[in-house]
Image: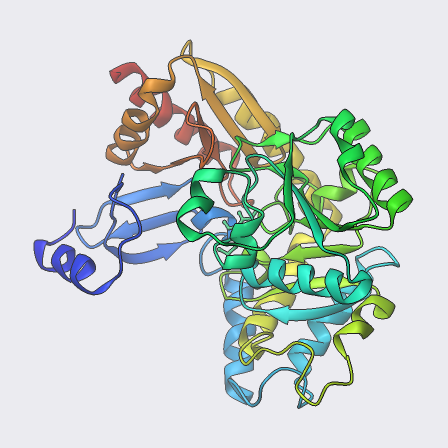
Amino acid sequence: MVSSQNQHLFKRYLAQTSDFQPFIIDVRHADGVYITDKSGKTYMDFTSGMCVNNLGNRHPKVMEAVHRQLEQYSYTMVYGEFIQQPQLDFAERLCALLPSSLQMLFYVNSGSEAIEGAIKLARLNNHRPGIVSFKKSYHGSTLGAMSIVGKADFQAPLSPLLPQTTLLDYNCVEQLTTITDHTCCVVAEVIQSGAGMVVADVAFLKALRQRCNEVGALLIFDEIQTGFGRTGKLFAFEHYDVVPDILCIAKSMGGGFPVGAFVASPDRMDKLNNGHPLLGHATTMGGHPVACAAGLETLNIISAPQFLCSVQQKEQWIRHYFKHPQIKTIRGKGLFLSVELQDANTIENVVIRCVDHGLLLLWLLFNHDTIALTPPLIITEEEIAEAAKRFCAALDEI
Ligand SMILES: Cc1ncc(COP(=O)(O)O)c(C=O)c1O
């Protein structure tokens, strides 16, 4: 329930980006897997705030880290000028968990900025014009990121965007010859979320890596949704024997606080320092100390092997409990799943009915047959069973 006054203020002051409003919740409180609105109704959040709250809302250890940091300082200076301990501690821990070719990072505030930084870094490394990405991919809403989003009707109203971009079919090895020595970089999700959790084939990802090596194009992985344990590994690329040249991360990285990064080798990162009196790349808020403190605590919890194993177990529980004649298939890995229904026309209705049943879900950007199942990674078996019960009750009503 939303008061008419707040509904009015919401529409009066916050720019609306779509007419499409499946649900507006007037949030009073959130804890773990649950969000409570101002009427006292509680919802299970099976979106994790679009893969931000991997540890749920207000994880006690993350909150402690935030409070500890706030006792010391909140913000002191733009990126790269002062030594701020949370930035160092977080970067050191993260790099210790990454392959030897991904050992230096640049902090940003969001996923789109990570993508922008990664493309810029690729350009500074090989000065080539072309950028390749994949149909039905989503990489953010800034102009550079929009230039490589895999859906032409998203781009049309914004043109002209970046030139010399090419969209290929995902998982299509034959089309990889389109990547040539004019290609600066290839940007790919390891699991395409907007497409409905379409998992990259091993052969495709390996061929992509090989083709980039052959022609000298840089391979950029967008792990903005798939990162930080979401798929049952710290990063989804760990399911494959393939390492990108540049890794983009954000969303759950800050445990509910805004921080992202692009990560590469020190050699490649060195090109950001182009000797120009103006900085090669800059950010005022990127690497905010409070977000870094929250991020380090989040990383420490998620990276524990038994925690990552539990995500794989929870995938099995979802596959076990989410059963209904209307469910055609469940795609994805770990807790990065989507459910495809027999009747695509019912998706919107199902999502809205689930809200009535106290279950928050989202459908996907480019695939209107499917609903995302991306609960917080801390969810229990009982909560999964309860969510499945609510989901099936909504399906029964259709
Ligand atoms: C795969 C992917 N890349 C990039 C982005 C952009 O991230 P942000 O909204 O933080 O700019 C998103 C956001 O949903 C995303 O899902």
